[in-house]
Length: 133
Image (cartoon, rainbow, N blue to C red; front, side, top):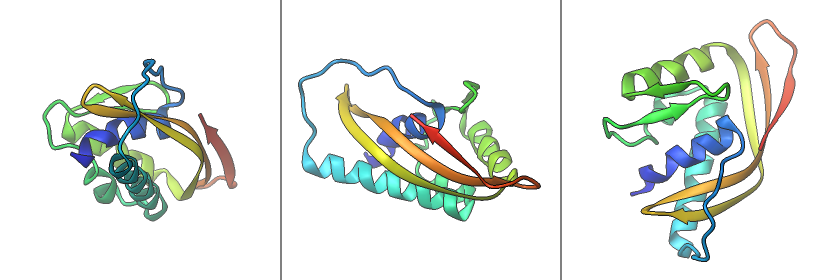
């Protein structure tokens, strides 16, 4: 069940602001804790530049998709995996810190929204900071 949540988390971290449905429901503490752990694992996968670690967080469903920061839609496990491979290959290093995040129920899943600050260095470039909200 934890893997269902990752798609929404990736959208938060990598694609920017999400439109969030209005809801008055709150999530159980174990679901919030599971999402926080997914956040941690995703950021650790970034730090290690480890595509396999990141891909292990995704569902194995054939309906898997990923929206990249530039808005490109990638569908299917192989295409999403290739996207991560290319992204990590462009980096010398990356480290992300969650500034704030909130989780909301959405059907049988969770939508996360908030802000992450990334400190990264592209190969052949100077270090930079990027804030993703």
